[in-house]
Image (cartoon, rainbow, N blue to C red; front, top):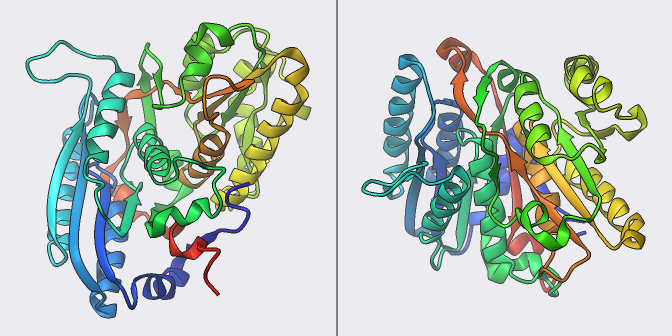
Length: 389
């Protein structure tokens, strides 16, 4: 288990951790954030910049990479909020450095439309070109779509940790990679994702388990991680990628701030998962709503158990579809990164299919009324240096 020991901070715990992380060394920073409508990104940026201004570390270079998106239907209010977010984030960051914008979309000027999966891969590759000689990489997922931040996080980890089995792998040559998120599960539940695409989108590096011909005879185990208002997306993934004989292990958020949340989700998903597919309730897994590393451990352990038990059948396909709030999704992404086989000769495969919505609906008032808690996951770098005393 890569993150047997980990660094995870919430709320006021973050500031002394940032102080320790940036003191007594020169810093070359790449900060990646979403050019989206979610105002929670402003709260994260403001807290981060103010902390650095007070601590006054030696910053040799700092760049903000804003990742924009095309292909979504938004109300005029949400489009205006998106533009405002971009202006505010660039203004907040300018005390540290410059801002660059990249866009991820399903078409390229002068070219024919491309698939969503290809667009995601090309956009991720474009973002990674900005990763060059940094000492610190920050990924703020607060205003990024689920597929984008999963693609970016797993791609950055793969670049920093090309060999997961290497000694001291998480040290990653001293590059400190942290993921920041302003979490408000109740707001996530109020953001409606509508009109899922008819074409599944696959996270780059996690598609061969569904596409490779040599894997098709292996049994498939599906881990849908359930969240509110995502039944349409689940049914789309189920119809396009999950065979009738698949083993289904629904993942529910528990513990949760709302003790009844898991019960309501069971009712919401009863028809597609339990009535239509006859999924045994004994297959249900529980993942901590607010602790990504605990969710990572729970999902990773389940995936490893299935892989071991199905070796007698030649191999298996492990498929994860994240439909829940951000912290659980991040934990799922870490589990998939660790389980990703090093090559095509492994006796298992891992895939992350998702039916990306084409329209998001939420009131701007709900966004502005949110009182999120900022969390930080430090995934690589000095905190994991086994050579440190």
